[in-house]
Length: 89
View 1 (cartoon, helix red, strand yellow):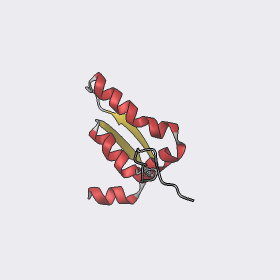
View 2 (view 1 turned 30 degrees about the vertical axis):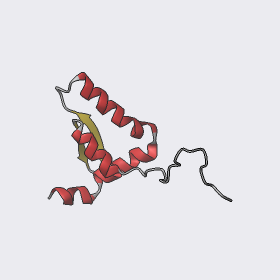
View 3 (view 1 turned 90 degrees about the horizontal axis):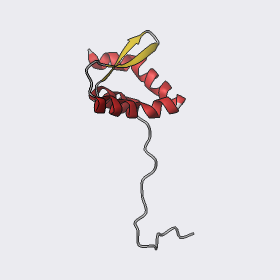
View 4 (view 1 turned 135 degrees about the vertical axis):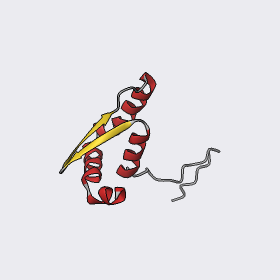
């Protein structure tokens, strides 16, 4: 079967981007967020003094993990894994 796009518009040639918890955490921190890890649990938080726009950007960044338990678990697993601690050493 020919799947060529003949309408004149180019068809996207990439698949859905996979969720990368390391990238998500790095962006979260860049936006002013932070986290605390205690054993097998973690807590995401934001620092005081963020502007309204910064708070809104941080809240928008959190939406994917609030809406999807598997992404939330991936972030938790990443933060509580030994590889993060090794990277900081």
